[in-house]
Amino acid sequence: MKNKKEFIQFVIVGGFAAGVNFVSRIIFSQWMSFSLAVVVAYGVGMVTAYLLSKFLVFAPSGKRAHEEFFHFTLINLAAVVQVWLISVGLAEYAFPWLAFDFYPEEVAHFIGLSVPVVTSYLGHKHFTFSQKI
Image 1 (tube, rainbow, N blue to C red):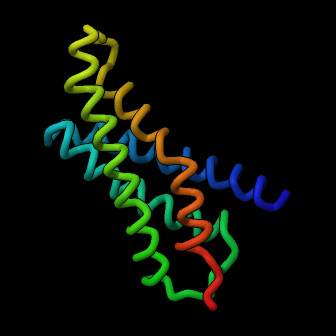
Image 2 (cartoon, rainbow, N blue to C red):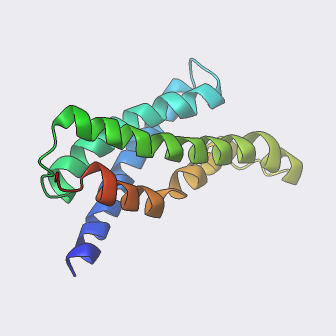
C-alpha cells in the first residue's frame, strides 16, 4: 500500500512539475526554437520535480543533496531524450505529415511529457532516493 500511495504522490508531483515544464516551454518558445525550448523547459520542470519529490514523496535517503540531485539528473537525462524525441518527432514530422494542426506543439509536448512517468518513478525510487547504505 505504501508503494501505491508513493506512486500516486509521485504522479501528482510529477504532474505539477510537468505543468511548470509545459508553461515554461510556451514562454521560452517566444524567444527560441521549439526544439531548444523543450530542453530548457525540461530543466525548469526537473528542478521543480526534484524539490517536490525530495520533500513530499520519498523518505529521506540519507544522501547529500548534491548526490541526490546528480542521480536525479542522470535519470532525467534519459527521460529528456524520450520527451525531446517524441515532442519534436510529433510536432515537426508526424503531425505535419498527418495534417494535424490543432496546437501541434502543445499536443506533441504534452504527449512527450507523459511518456517517462513509470520509468522515472522506478529510477528515482531505486536510485535517486534509495536509502544510503
